[in-house]
Length: 121
Image (cartoon, rainbow, N blue to C red; front, side, top):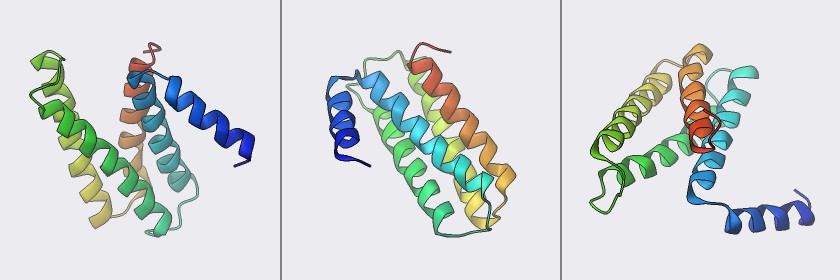
């Protein structure tokens, strides 16, 4: 990434709302998973990296959904937690039985939630 692009990325991160930052992170994870799916080489470092990034991101969402200081209604927090549990189970399934088709659900979830966070859903 060029210096100008890096500077823009830093500036956009500091001026973006938390919802937009979350949406950007979800889209980054979806792009990584999509790239692995498109260029499938079987289980490799790219798959491991994409799944790790996505799992870490969803771990943050799960932790936030369970936090007592979360201002969201309980129903929304429970929905996020349920999706997060599915993401974690799907990730383990992909690691145990790698198949590029299984990445589609993770990609779709991330894209749909990102769209909702950005007001496009």
